Image 1 (spheres, rainbow, N blue to C red):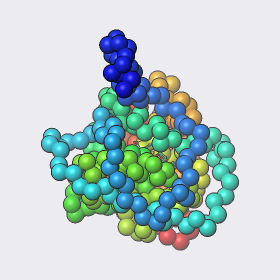
Image 2: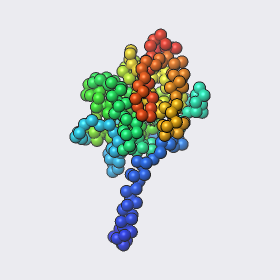
Image 3: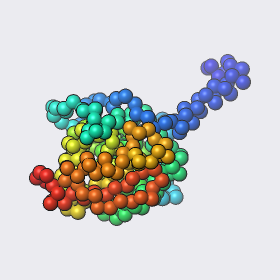
Length: 297
Ligand SMILES: C[S@@+](CC[C@H](N)C(=O)[O-])C[C@H]1O[C@@H](n2cnc3c(N)ncnc32)[C@H](O)[C@@H]1O
């Protein structure tokens, strides 16, 4: 109605304004929003529906498939967190490092921004992981699934990707994106700040891209991740390099290699491999040998 009555120039301006949000999102800075959503909302299992606007986030991605496969139903989200499990207050610091706030789901478009490949060389990161068909991998702190979808393609139909996040909204976005790509070898799990709810002793790798520095309870998360690894499984951390002032990310969202090691080694992880060719990030591969394990696995 407004458009029909408005003079043509006003209509054009309004139409241009309507296109603005998408452009603004692509430029959004990597800042954290104040609080994560209440994960207790919702039932035990959720089947997200497709809705208008679901296709707002395909810009980035490291997709290697040229054609888009047939759509499938949005994947269910396992929401069965233990709502009675007490979560201790989050400490502001861990081992001298200030813990960053969780990136809010409204910032999700930044994770699939067009420039991400150019800035972070995500394809190189994926190649460095050396994912093999049939593997079981967790994308921890999966967000809206930038890495999850490509991991799912790489492990193939015989493999499985667990996508864990503490924000149900992120998992809903991921579920719809997976459906749009025709991928169904992904299990979506709502975790809590102290429990990613992974099966024990099964994972070939747990990948945390720009996530570890956000763990509000890092020791509890590391212990649960260690328990989830199969023999020979790896925890892989990608963190913006804290030693490098040229990396244009706020210091709170960066980590030095020394800090990462100082935090992971007391929990039973050993640095096994480093990949130093990413433009902005450390990529660190940790094993959890039984000899380094502080408690029972
Ligand atoms: C900066 S985003 C990165 C998303 C994704 N890894 C990527 O690179 O596109 C960090 C994500 O980690 C999630 N997160 C933070 N703490 C978490 C925890 N304890 N368990 C699972 N996810 C967590 C946040 O909700 C957010 O979606």
